[in-house]
Image 1 (cartoon, one colour):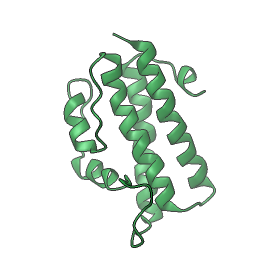
Image 2: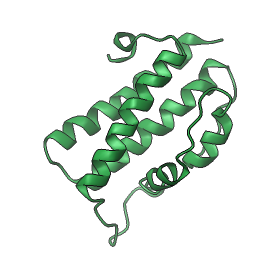
Image 3: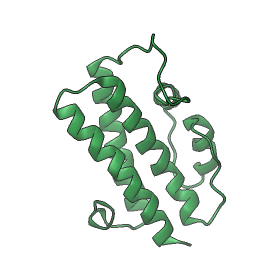
Length: 133
């Protein structure tokens, strides 16, 4: 078990999540918030792999990552994971026709991400104040 490595991953996940929270409260652009939320979910889930010292696959597909961590946590809302996966931008610049996700959708994903983050910290027995730095 590698709690320190998992803690590092959760710290990065917190950076993305806290950015999303600040941007949401500032009523910033939903597409930018969505990218931050995607990275927070991705990195939060990958913290299980860090904890177990398993090679961390370079994938942004949350359904695929969910399969890799299903022995540690059960997330059966595949529709939501699929939606959040679409928030990822594969290139350096988003396509012109990228639509802003509705604010209600962003709020749902934000709530999910916050709950997931707390749940993962609890499962790994990592205190929130150890990663919220």
